[in-house]
Length: 361
Image (cartoon, rainbow, N blue to C red; front, side, top):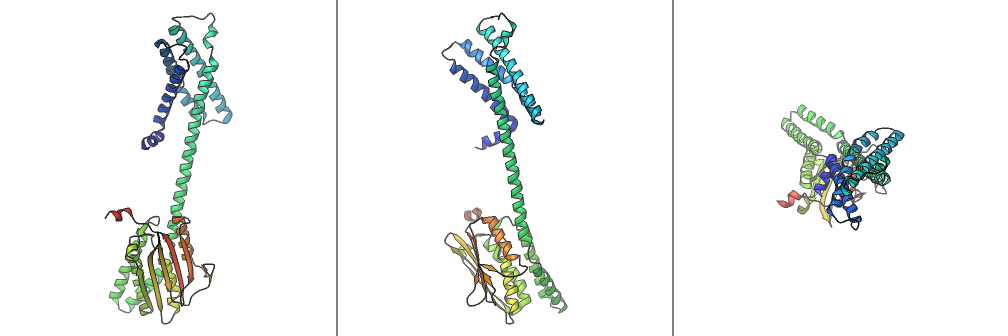
């Protein structure tokens, strides 16, 4: 299969292979068809010689047709049919000479135009050769256009995924920098230094991870922990986080930073709205052959209609849905529901996938 693929991609080698195979097939079929006519080796020699002359005479057609394809329709048709007819005429003469000189031992026709007899048969063969040439060329052109369209679609798909992934809420960065500035003014340099270090590690993770690729859940948890430690400096005791992650799913692959916007929303719309603070619960567990991820808060809740939140200027949740759609097609679920007794719970179900390299260790 790989050898055929290499042959197809090498246009020069493909032409010579098909060209030779075609004329070789002509010789075989012609000999089998005229087997009862003559079984002597001299007849086989004439057939091989005719096939070889056809092989030679049709080679220039390749370069003539290559030029003709760059012309307008009428000039192309005139060039193709004119060159095909002249080639057929020349091949008819060569075949007649081979037949008379070799098979008939030097026979000479009475009239000169007899050399051009059976031109129609030669023309049919040359036209078939021309048809196959243009058919293969058009097929190659369509395949190339299909590959280019697929490549363009893939590049656009990847660019779209990257745009969605990097369209994170800038409020987090502004709030963190303001918190660091406040800590510096309050002379809490060690806390500020730790916060800068965590922010650096989190931003490095968010920029280094390719949005097209998936990462093990364990790495995602570590990045989310960095993010939450930064937020805990701002909210102190007002932010409480509980983790419920099954050990068996930690190597499961997830889109990078797929949960970060959900946690950010919980902090913005739940924790920050409660004077006494609140709790965020993060769950990851197996669900049949799928991986179930949940982020829930115990905040004041929100208006939910038909599984959609009614909030203004929110890009986090639509981005998550678009990323999941791009990565998994229809094989995922994304649901938003009321948490019990209060708050909002967001659930994501995706296929449970594991990196093959992880299985080998």
